[in-house]
Structures are given as structure tokens and as C-alpha cells.
Length: 295
Image 1 (cartoon, rainbow, N blue to C red):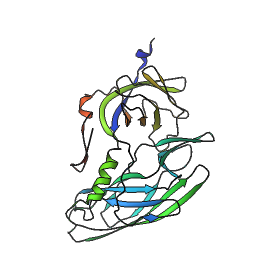
Image 2: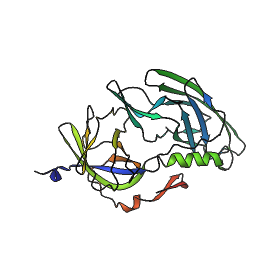
Image 3: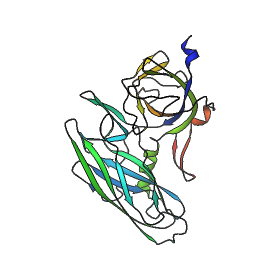
Image 4: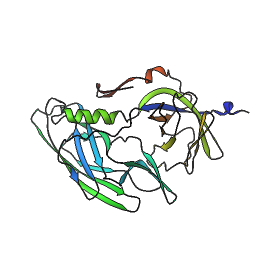
């Protein structure tokens, strides 16, 4: 039986645009530790009640140092945030851009090097009167590493805001727009794969521009790290290691070829069929507002 008969599982695609480093936004005095600095940059310093406000968490580990992705791989841990919030105010778990693969002494890690912006959502409950002061504090716990050492860091965070009407801060708006282009966007395409001899064989024939250097990262927090991927015709072969995908798994595929130059994130869905065209252009939306156009 040919491989075409064995495409028993499918993957739900989404796309991330532009991986260029984000521009710095001087939003507030950064929270600085020995090897890392963090800026908190809400879209508005006067968030409106009853609405979601994007919150950029800009992290700079310093030259030669790195922090960890949502799935750190074989070692490390992702940034952790413990917020102390006014009653009714919430902050969502942050979303990460795509990582890079780092291997040291046989240990494979999924990391962020250089300035990195995570995106969360800040929500002020409906009914809060304009002018109400919001004292938002918290702690960020990070593991900051170089190729020779790791330093756990704990930073106290503070973000004083005042309830208002949601007027956007230009610098924060630019930072959030740039960061949003690195987040998953739906491509509306089913991509099949099968597992053979401990490796996932993923059909790339329907992905225009999936060329050049490719990397694959399991997205689950405990997904571990895959082996080095390689092409076999129209298939991407990814050694699974300890990952057991079953009917599917979440992953991030980074395509470094000039034709694509972007990341692809997919979520596994069995026998999902949706039109491809709708995912090729659009905008990133937060609470119904289009903050950043992508293509």
C-alpha cells in the first residue's frame, strides 16, 4: 500500500507573518534584573471598562543570553507570571512567537534569543467608572541562560493604569502590531501526516513556499523536543522522540526559505476540510478591533 493510502491524520494550519525583531517601545521604565529586562506595554494607559486591551510583555535577556518558549524542550522553563490584580481585572496567559532550536551537549531546547515580545490580554470589568485607578502588580519568574550557565530571575512588575476610554498609545500600538504578526493565524487547510518508524511524515505538497531550512516544534508545554527534521520529497520527516501524537498534535513549523520566510503553526484535526483561500490575507483582531494587517 502506497504512502498516499496512509495519510490517516490531518493538521490544521495557521500562519505567522514577519519574523523580524520587534522595534523597541519606550513605554515605561523597564524592570531590570542581572541578565534580563521586561517592559509592560498595554495598548492603552487608560483601558476602557468591559473591553479587552492587548498587553505586550517585552523581554530582553541581553546579548548572548536566551529565555525559553512555551514548550522549553528537554530543559528549562517558560516565563511564569503571577499577577496581583484589582477585583474583576484579568490578564490572560501570554502567547509566544515561534522559537529557535538550540542543542547543547545533546540537550535540545526551544528558546527565544534577543528581544522577544509576548502578547497577553488585559480585561477591565464592565461598570468601572472612568478615572478609577488600577494598581496592577506581579512577579515574573524566568530562567535566563547562556551557552555556559543559567540564572533564575524573579522580577517584581508594576503597571499603574487608570480606567478611561481606550485611547491607544502610539508606541505601544506599533509594538503590539509587530508582535501580533508573529502569532498563529488560521490558514484553513487540512494537512495529512502518518507515523512510521518513530517519525511523523507530514505532507507539505499543499504548502506554497515550504522550502529552505525547516524546524518543527511541538506546541504543548510538555511536548519535549523533536529530532532534526529533513525533507523526503513532498514530506517533512520529523523524528518524534518521546512524543506520541495519536490522531494529531499541535506544532510550529518554521520555514526559513526566502519564498516563505515565515512560520506556520498547525493544530491537529482529523478529516477537517476548509477552503484555503480565506487564510491568505486578513487582520489580527482583538475584541473585534483590527490592530495589525498581515499578509
